[in-house]
Amino acid sequence: MKKSNFSNRVYQVVQEVPVGRVVTYGQIAKKLGKPKTAQAVGKALHQNPNPKEIPCHRVVNHFGRVAKNYAFGGEIAQKKQLIAEGIKFKNKNYVNLKYITIL
DNA sequence: ACCATGACTCCAT
DNA sequence: CATGGAGCCATGG
Image 1 (cartoon, rainbow, N blue to C red):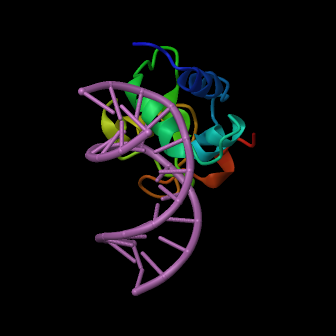
Image 2 (image 1 turned 180 degrees about the horizontal axis):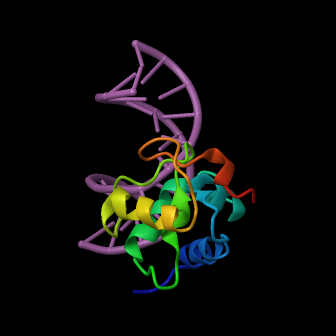
């Protein structure tokens, strides 16, 4: 699998997200200089399931909601990981917006 | 280059 | 709140 420049940068940004914080797809896209590539960001993460090095569970959508199609056990697994890092949920699948990292 | 797909986002109904 | 369409873009066939 050839790692495209784009995907590589996505992973890099995700890895820089500190514990106890989350980031949105749009934020990542914006940081890469392409604010409209949020969907491509999500695709890149889904295609490269590498939780050992990439904390993709810290990536949520712009509402702070976890991914319903999360690749490693679904939203439940993602939610558990976030809770384990000290992140609280407003509702079932919505992370409190105050946890979103400001890039 | 074209088409289909999708872990997105925005807007209308 | 649910649903759907449009727009954008990376990726793969």
